[in-house]
Amino acid sequence: MTSTELTLGPVYYLWDGPKWRDFYFRIADEAPVSRVIVGETVCSKRQHLVDPYMDAVTERLEAAGKEVVVSTYALVTLMRETKKLRALAANGDRLVEVNDLSAFMYLDSRPHTVGPLVNVYNAATARLLKTRGATTLCLPPELPMSSITAIAVGDPGVELEIFAFGRVPLAISARCAHARSKNKIKDNCQFVCAEDPDGLDVRTLDRQPFLSLNGVQTMSHTCQALLGELDALRSAGVSRFRLSPQNCDMVAVAEVYRAVLDGSLDVETGKARLTAIYPDVPLSNGFLYGKEGAAFVEHAADS
Amino acid sequence: MARCCSRSRVHGADLPRRNPSAFRAAVDAGADAVYCGFRDETNARNFPGLNFSREELGEAIAYAHCHGSKVLVALNTFMRAGAEEIWYEGAREASRLGADALILADMGLMAYVTENLPEQRLHVSVQASASNADAISFLVDAFGAKRVVLPRTLTIDDIARISKAVTCEIEVFVFGGLCVMAEGRCALSSYATGKSPNMNGVCSPASHVRYRREDNEMVSELGGYTINRFGNDEPAGYPTLCKGRFDIGEACGYAFEDPVSLDVMSEIDALRAAGVSALKIEGRQRGKAYVAEVVSTLKAALDADPERRAVLLSRLRGLSEGQKTTSGAYEKKWR
Image 1 (cartoon, rainbow over the protein chains, first blue to last red):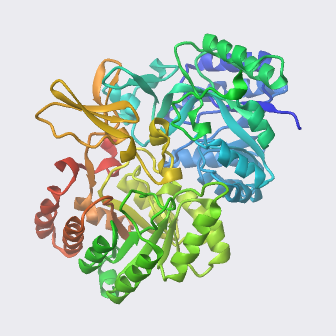
Image 2: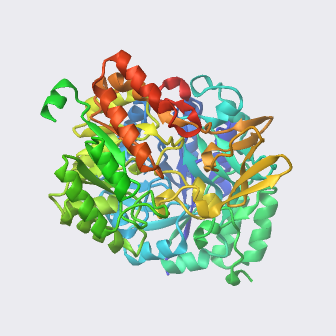
C-alpha cells in the first residue's frame, strides 16, 4: 500500500489578514500535512483582504517543505472573477485547484488538482478529467462509500482524495444569506461574514442547530469526521485525506489524523480528541454510509 | 418558425412534462419544445407518478413531431458510480426513439454521448453549473454542446455578456420554481434526508416530509428538522429546505428565500436583447390544466405588444406558488 497523505483544504471563512497569515505560518511549522491549498474560494469580494499576505504564506509553507496549491473561486459569474481565475491558471509556478468548470478552459490540459466542489460522481468523469491534466481529485463530500469504491475500481489514473474533516460545504448561491441575515445586501455587505470566523449558526424554529452560513456558502452545522473509515477508504484506493480548516487548532486535528493513519492512535481516542479540539460541534459521517449527511454512524471497526 | 425567428431570436418556449397527458397539453398549447425524462434516477425530477416509460416516450415523441414540437430528454442527474450503464442505455434509447436533444449534466455522460452518439444534439443542463462564458465554451469545445441552460444565479446583464462570448444557444428559466442555490451544487437535501438532486433526482423528497400540529401551529418537517411553522391564518406550504423559516442570530425568518416562485416574463424584451433563444418554464408536479394555461399564455405574450402582454401575464400570477413571485437573480438587487 502506498503512503497516505494529508491535505489541508482552503480556509473557506473570512478571517482577518494577520490571523489568516499566522494560521498558515503555524501550519507550515507544525502540521503533518504534505499539501496545503491556499487562496480565496468562496467570495471574490474578499480577495483584497487575503492578497497582501499570500506571498508570505506561500513562501513560508514552501520553505517548510509543503506543496502549495492555489485555490480558485467556486462560483464564477463576474468579469473580475474570470480575470483572476485566468491569471491564476496562467501562472505556471504552482498547481491550481479547480472549483469551477471555466478553469479547465484556461488550464488547457496542464497539471492541476480538482476540488470537492466539482461534480465527479463516477469513474467516467474521473478519467475524463485525468486526460485534461487532473492529478488529484477531491471527490464531492456527499458521495457514499459504494461510489468511492467504484470510482477507484474504475482506475481513473489519478490520486483520489476524500473530505475527511470539517464542516461540509453544502451549497453556494449568488445571493448572500449571511449579509441578508444582518440586514445587508451582497453589494454593500461591509464584510459582515468576518464577524463569524467559524460560520453563523442557522437553527430551526425549534432552536435545533442545522446549518452554518459562510457568506454566499451554506455549510453543515456538523463537522464531517471520517476516522473509523480511514482504513476502509485507504483499502479502496484513496490516497489523500482532506482536512478543511475550522476555527480550532488545526495542527492538533492534523496530528490526530496522522496518528490514526499511522496506527499509533486508536479511532476512539482520536474521536475523543477531535471532540475536545473542536467542541460544541457534533461530528458526522452519514454521507459516506449513504445516509443523511448530518448523521453519525458508529462503525463496527471503531471498537 | 423561420418567420418567428426573423422577428426575434426568442423562438422557444420549453415546457416540462408531468406525464403523458400533461405532455400532450403542452404540445397542443403550442410549446416549441417539451422536455421530459425517463421514470428512473436518470433525471432530476424523479418524483413518484411522473415521467415516461420507454414506450410512452416513443409515443410522446411521435405525437410532438406530428404537431411540430420538439422533444428534449433530460438525463440530468450524475451517473451513479458502477451503474453508469443505466444512463448510457437511457441516452441510447432516447436517441433511438428520436429525441431532438439530450439535456445532460454529467461530463462523463457527455463524453459517452459525444463518442457513441455523435449525431445526437446535446444540451447542457442547468445542473451542470456552467455559470460563465468560459465554462460554457469548455463544454461546447469538449462535447459539442449546442445549447446551455443557464443557472438562476445570473443577472440579465451577465446573460448578455455570456451570450456575446459563446457560440451555443442560451436557454433561461422564466417561470416556475426558483432555486436559490447554484443548481447542481447543492447538497442541502442530502444533508437532511440522504437524498439529493445530483444523485437521486429529488430535492426535499415527500418521503421525508412530516406535518404535525402543535397548539395553534402547523409544523412542517423535513428529515426531522423543522422547516417552518404556520399560524392558523397561513397556508402550510411544502417544506422545501431552502424556502424554510429559520433562526439566525437575533433574526428569525426566511433565511435563504421567501416561498416565492420565479416570474421574469415581464423582462422578455430584455432577455431577447440579451441573446436568449429559449425560455424555459419549470413546472414540476403540475397538472395538465396548469401546463396548458401557462404555455398558451406565455406563447401569446411573446408576440404581444407591451400593453396586451401585461394583461396576459397578470393572468398567470394567480397560478404561481404562494401567489408571490420574484425576478430572482435576474435583477441585481436580489442579491
